[in-house]
Length: 128
Image (cartoon, rainbow, N blue to C red):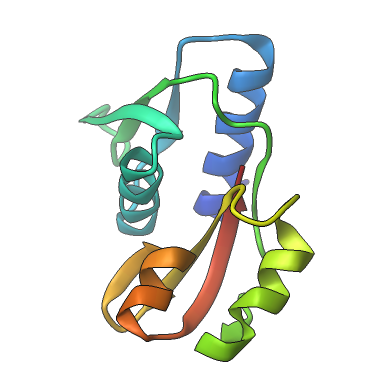
C-alpha cells in the first residue's frame, strides 16, 4: 500500500534513470504535477503527460538522463528565506548544483526562485 505519492514518484524517477529507461509512469496527484513542472522547468525531465488509466491517472514522464539522485525530505521542514543556505548544504552536493523543491504561499518552486521572490516555505524534496 502506498502512503506518500511524492516519495513513490521520486523513487520511480531515480530507479528508471539508473537502469537507463527513456520514460516511466508515476501516479498522478496535484502535488506530483506541480513538482514535475518544476523539474521540467529546470531540465531534469523532458516532459510529463497526463494519461487517464481508470484508477486516478498517471503521468508518463520522459527522462533526460540528468537525475543522479532525488528524494523527498521528511519531515517537511519549515524554511525561512535566511535558512535556505543551511538546507542547501545539507541536501545538495555542492553550491549551484541541484535544486531544493519547496511549497510556498505562491506555489511549488525551486529554492532559487523562492530566494528571488523573497519567500520561504516547506521543503518537499531535492533533485540533482
